[in-house]
Image 1 (cartoon, rainbow, N blue to C red):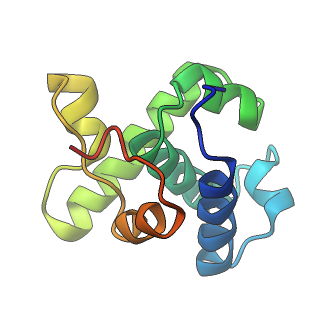
Image 2 (cartoon, one colour):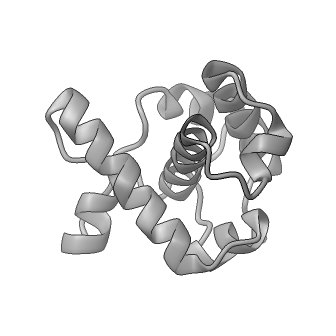
Length: 122
């Protein structure tokens, strides 16, 4: 992981999403393809990718998955957000147009609470 990455931010994001989605940490980091686990996992990936300087490879290593799986999961999460809220999200602009990204609905407050810098939120 990048040396300037806030482990506190990662911990808070993972635990908050785990609680909100009502999944255990074991389920979040596990191999299960159960829809509610997969959705929560994709949300964590999208939020961490948007709010930290972690690469897809680093996220993949953290979750024991290939970076292409992480990328596909983030894009899938983005498509779901776009369908629900009608606006493009983090990965859509970052991957396809290489523009600044926006975070998941509540990530800005998490970033502010930890004092971390949200590099991809600009």
